[in-house]
Length: 331
Length: 79
Image (cartoon, rainbow over all chains, first blue to last red; front, side, top):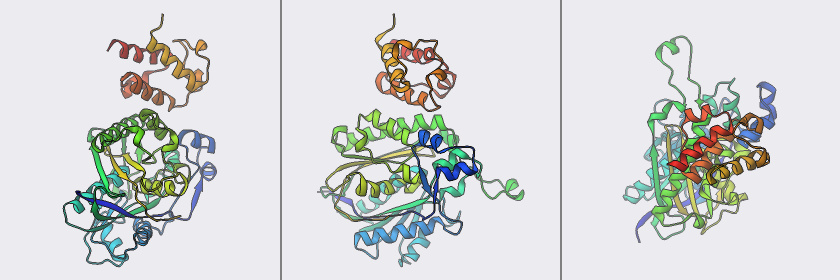
């Protein structure tokens, strides 16, 4: 059997403050009905001003380590688009706060596809023999990028973190990451971005650019890219869509998820979704959905699972995994 | 005489809008079917799946009537 990276733990964290659709409707020109019918979101968790991406990552990381029964790993990787500092990466401070000063640590940035890209990175390093164990965290405080007047963005986005522990194992074990597909298309970078602040803008007092997204072109590309990517990863692992017990997509928008399920002819009960409760949490989205799937949507050991993501870049990717017997620690 | 592809599109539009298929003509404005801004892209994705036809962003922006969508279906049939 071939060496493979195997999932050994899962932990998630959501900041305690909840913003409901009605709360948004009090300050913006929107309504609960408008938000629910267009996005499927009822509420989102929003980190307070003092809480950083690193704080969210540490909380999820602690839980993933506990879930795996470990206190140390060989490498710490954080997928985030909202690092605590522009430089350096967030992972070294997260590693130190988890009691692992001295451990290799770095960030991966692929926006909403960050969790899939990061899994591919960590899996490859384990396969290559560089490390035996890894803590990989997807965390974002993406609400920091939002224009306070942007009703679409504030309806869509929430904060959170999710983490997995991976260990070296064999490809026939439950939990083995079996196949990947990754892609990008920088030609459409402008459809979905947080622009950098130029020096003149900074001199004029601007501290950051705001997130913006072209809804309709992003919708079509998200559905097409995730659908095609799932087909590719299924081809690599030798599964048909009928073999997929659970699809765990990036929680972009409930209608995007429904459209992907339709394209793949997957019954909706096989598509894990927690977007109603948490919104789009960027790099944290897939691991938060995994925890939700285990608690509420029947995701269990032995299931053939495909994770798929799409996000700014544009980027997309998928991974196939046979779900392991692990403890999920989260809320 | 509509083609099978066009008939299928009318069925899809009818399902999504809950407007009876016999009431849907090429001249029917999509607005009259109670579509919100995402239904058009949802329909475009169904066309991609069923007929392999991909509408560009610009083409979608220009679609205002059922007939506009039927043109995509026709394109798929002649492709």
